[in-house]
Image 1 (cartoon, helix red, strand yellow):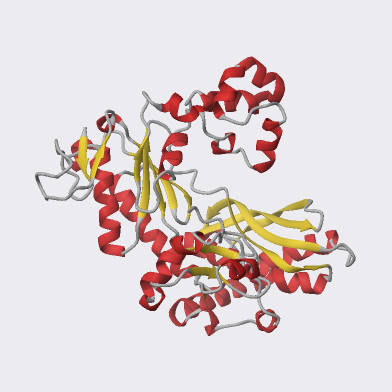
Image 2 (spheres, helix red, strand yellow; image 1 turned 135 degrees about the vertical axis):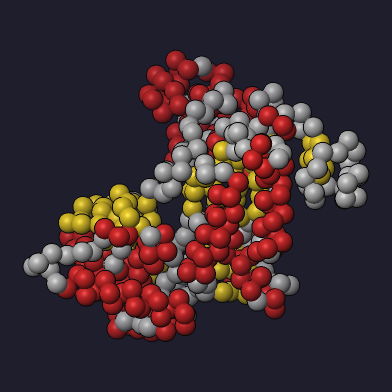
Amino acid sequence: MMLCRACANETTTPHCLHCGEERPLEHAELSGLSIAHLDCDAFYASIEKRDDPSLQPFPVIVGGGKRGVVSTCCYVARAYGVRSAMPMFKALQLCPQAKVVHGEMAKYVTEGRIIRRMMEDLTPQVQPLSIDEAFMDLTGTEALHGGTPAQSLIKLQNKIWEERNLTVSIGLSFNKFLAKTASDLDKPRGFSVIGRGEALEFLESRSVGTLPGVGPAGATALERNGLKKIGDIRHVGPQRMRSLYGDWGAHLFALSMANDPRKVDPDGERKSISSETTFFEDVSDIEALEDILWPLCEKVATRCRASESSGLTLTLKLKDTKFKIITRRRQLPEPTLLAARIFAAARELLQAEADGRTKYRLIGVGLSDFSDAAVADKGDMLDTETPKRAAAEAAIAKARQKFGRDAVVTGRGLKVQRDDEPEEIDEEGD
């Protein structure tokens, strides 16, 4: 089957007989696949370039501060070797002509929700993974939209460009693992397909790091047993993989066989909302760590408010100079989305962990175990301060949304700004 990527009509030649464009999408299984992964291309940087045309000719980095890190960057900057989570000073050494934009998370959240609604217009089976990517299951939507899932996705990709002036890449396959893998194959504005007939051959020579859940440490563990390619996992067999790695090994073998039974689950939207930052210089002073912690708590609160969510479990994350990661968790008395309550709980965990001598290179905070925002921060007869604080933070959020981030700044926030506020590492899929 061959589809025109300009008009989504079937065509028998690369030169579309309907619109005259030469943008064909061809695959033998195109009409029978319905699991898709949509990923916005360099989302934050693309929004900044769209909203400020003067940035168009330049490499753009979203981040900031001499102690900060790169949140994301455009594809021009990536050509110079700039990557997400890279220290800003190193990014500017690689690409000194780059334009650095601090960025506004509220703006990105708003844009992400607009694109989310476009996806939900195609199917209710949308499972967001982050602000800028999601799985979709378009099974059974042919009659509703008058075309195959592939045709509907082409139209969606073009609609996002026409209405939002942003590009997205789409992967289409028969399961989530392969759909997400496909979406990375031809960025930006790619549309790639992996069918059943080619899946095993496609996976054979790819790195084990392609498998979901296999990070650098996992890849190293696999390579110690000679498992560098996905095909290596397949060749040793399920029994050997289970004997070496238990249930995880059995799971990896199933993936190596292109078997991923996970369903697209709209209720699996996100497991946590978090924000973290890596320091330009290592920090041991507890008060300095608290000053850095506060804006991270504000960012988590902002994201919770934007997603209309509240969290019951708080997590504090630290990384020391030996790259040892320490995580501490606490269940709160009730769900919250207030920066003040997030900070108070995280501060207690920090004070119990930091001794003023150990140096840290990263700190982060997050919420999980979500409920609707409507059930959060009610207080009780003995707690009259929480509702007052909730009303105050809601008013601050409204003012910032209307007039910008710096419209209202707390005393601690002002102190952090003077000390050059660190920039977060944000998990944006690119």
